[in-house]
Length: 141
Length: 141
Image 1 (cartoon, rainbow over the protein chains, first blue to last red):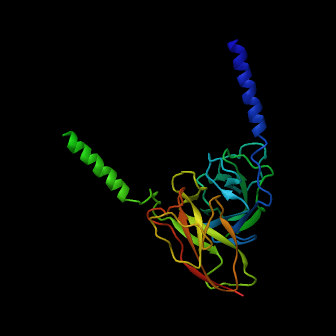
Image 2 (cartoon, rainbow over the protein chains, first blue to last red):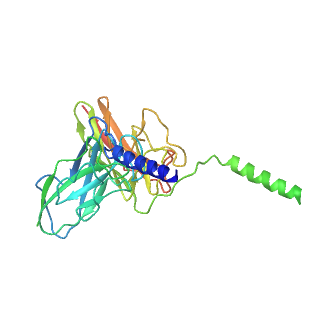
Image 3 (cartoon, rainbow over the protein chains, first blue to last red):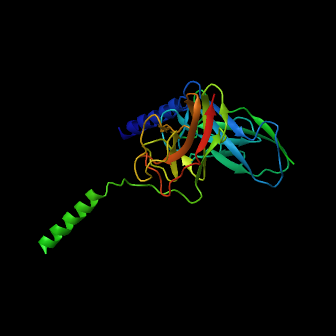
């Protein structure tokens, strides 16, 4: 009997995680953009620069906070969009702003870099449909 | 002794009742609220604009949710700062962004207008010290 209950619980967990893998719905018209720097801009090497996270028709909430039509920003550096049905990786190319930050300061090595924003829900999962910015290219010289 | 105890209990009750000051959350040192756009003195044609709300050293969290070092934006239009130890009023001159919005769509009548941001905690009460932006003036034509 205990085994059956355990199996049922396991099945329910698997089913629930599968159901939630679809992601939190994003509101219609949600729009994410990089307010600064601008596409193609050249930044001075060794000098920290600010990155502005823009979001319209949607709100910001810290990680772990399940509030309708919100998420938190993830800044993708020199990488493409990750799979939308999985938790956004957390590494040097995928910076999480789980405290609800709406800007950051970056220092990048000289060269060509790309920046892109991707919203994640309270569990760091992209929304459905995903909300991400245009990928911009900047130059550090 | 029981009389003294009763009196001190009464005193505590009276003191609590005499202080209508709501609980205030602390703000981290260096926290700064500012208007990214429009710039001070901007001329807006048509009166419809997106106000981009900037916050440094703190995060955004929707109303009703307690999260350390966070708050939500309030846009003050054509008005001065309200009392900083009370709940921020909610009316046509004190716009609340309790869903964690960081871009505000506003429509203003032709003329001179002032804009100022004031951060509020989960109960719409300013932090200590209060986090607010410079007051800017814009012209709608």
